[in-house]
Image 1 (cartoon, protein in one colour):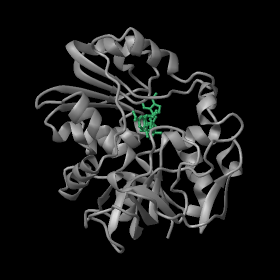
Image 2: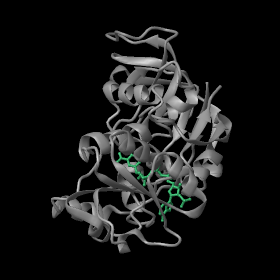
Image 3: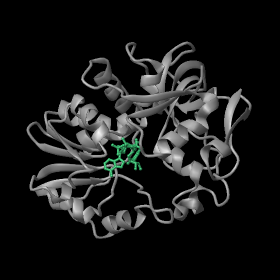
Length: 329
Ligand SMILES: NC(=O)c1ccc[n+]([C@@H]2O[C@H](COP(=O)([O-])OP(=O)(O)OC[C@H]3O[C@@H](n4cnc5c(N)ncnc54)[C@H](OP(=O)(O)O)[C@@H]3O)[C@@H](O)[C@H]2O)c1
């Protein structure tokens, strides 16, 4: 099958090259999926570039421990492994091969077939295209976990989303709004109208105003950029407000690892960390919200699989508006 194989760390278009590999066999509890679409997420960019360097002991010292990038998938079931119930060949599905970090031999999705744990797979709602379904996995589920489960956003609350025009931000704005919150999005001038169209009542253009210097206060701040230290972002919280620091940042050596470690060790009661949990229930929940029209998947651009390097470079530019998708068909 056609597979995008990574040879080392570096410029995405140099190190991500199309080659051939064997179609995998589904193991116990796994489903073999013919990939129709996948999408690009921050972990794919980090593992391609090999940054922050502090992650290399887990990511792989000179090359990533697994040569195939990608974790989101939407496609059609080709075969099922032992002990899999509820899925059959021909079913349209979406899900994730994410293993919770960088693991040796982990499958990727920048290829034509992949094996997915049945517990991380759901039937694709009929109204969603394969591209939309793939774009809803890591970004949509993480934003859902953040807003619904971690921040527990309630009607009438004030929610600020920094990085409102990105993959996660476009979902977070819509989900907070769907939960009844009054949403403020932070983005640059060119994305103001997009963020407003997603349901933000207020938009702060960061090229003109820095949100920590505003007088407004928020019950929830989701920071997908972390261009301000968490202690500075926390200034705009109400007394019982919650801060969701959610970015690896841009520092080549350490990223935002020191602030995250500091938060974990001396955690302010107002800080909460969020984790991507690709359970079948979370996939079904985000799928249902999109199917109902309450949330839409914003796709910046869809690239053919062969141009995976270009797609990763686009995402790594940090200028993506919504999702970057790869079509494997
Ligand atoms: N917790 C988890 O499990 C989990 C899972 C996935 C991702 N993440 C984290 O979530 C973060 C966001 O991911 P993403 O996919 O949304 O990233 P993304 O799509 O690459 O974000 C790009 C967006 O960021 C905006 N942006 C760049 N600089 C900004 C600034 N100074 N202020 C406000 N907006 C700015 C850009 O808008 P402009 O062009 O308008 O600047 C662009 O639309 C990542 O850092 C990643 O590490 C966490």
